Amino acid sequence: KAGVTQTPRYLIKTRGQQVTLSCSPISGHRSVSWYQQTPGQGLQFLFEYFSETQRNKGNFPGRFSGRQFSNSRSEMNVSTLELGDSALYLCASSLWLAGGSYNEQFFGPGTRLTVL
Amino acid sequence: SQQGEEDPQALSIQEGENATMNCSYKTSINNLQWYRQNSGRGLVHLILIRSNEREKHSGRLRVTLDTSKKSSSLLITASRAADTASYFCATTGGGADGLTFGKGTHLIIQP
Image 1 (cartoon, each protein chain N blue to C red):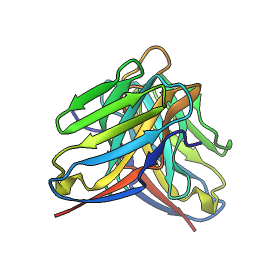
Image 2 (image 1 turned 60 degrees about the horizontal axis):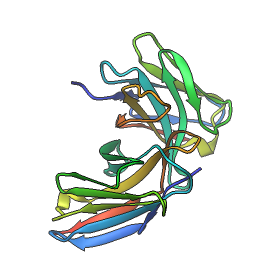
Image 3 (image 1 turned 180 degrees about the vertical axis):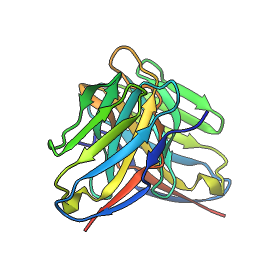
């Protein structure tokens, strides 16, 4: 089975621009989550999508948004980029687990975004 | 916000020795998971322990969970150079959305 893939792997943008990151989950996984990793704040949950619906959202400003397509592929978008948005953005897929908990997450290699 | 706090932040041991990392958390949980990350790449799931379990084994890994102390430990036995990585605990539940990660323990195995 192919793993989680993320594109692009590296991205350099300037302040004020917007960016779209893409994630393809493992075949059969319908839950896709996004995380931001920075040296200062560590790993932080952005949002989770299941069956094209946002199921959970972390504490990030509205500049961060996402969506999921019918084939479970997901994109996240960051508008009006700030220097502090420089981070490793990780996507994870999993099988849906009833009861509101999270099962084993399969992470992609990440997209390293640098904002200049 | 960070729920889990790993201890120590960094650990350097000789190959063949055992490595123990601890994780403390603040709220009630459904389960606790440990992940490994090599050099800023993606995370790899190691083991999951549910809130009603006290101990779990997987190969050279042993995880314990003490919900009364809100803490967990990860033991890696007979360490190898390839175990050099950052290790994170992550909790689910307690009203939080998604996985809540700790800051991680950076483990270095000296050959």
